[in-house]
Amino acid sequence: MKPDPIESRPLLGAGGRWIAVAMIAFLTTLIPGNLSLAQQAQPETRRKAVQKIEPGYPAMAKTLKLSGTVKVAVKIAPNGKVVSAEALGGHPLFTQVAVDAVRLWRFEAAGQQTEEVVFINFQP
Image 1 (spheres, rainbow, N blue to C red):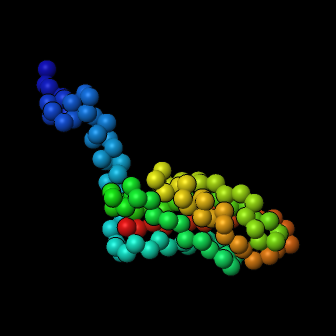
Image 2: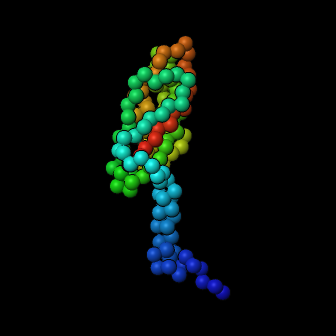
Image 3: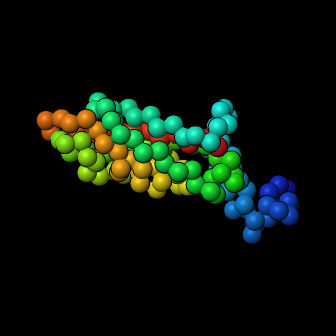
């Protein structure tokens, strides 16, 4: 019987397999490109955001030089205030700061409550 190639590596043995999985998860979230510290908030909405609060870049993500995008579902009251915001997807290190920032946004007024989707991009 052939030995399992993963089991034959000391770092990736039975107790260390999670390290490999974690490394792969982090590496697959890296997006090459602009290396500025600024994050770009790009709403894809029907209602225009008139006031945007930029999310802070998490210290752990900065240390790991992670990039990523968070998709946020936003319910907006007729007066333009955010009623609720919920992350629909994105790297766990970015989701909470993105949702917290979007909750502070203000949109243009409308005749009724609407639901929008906003994408927040993070780059180291």
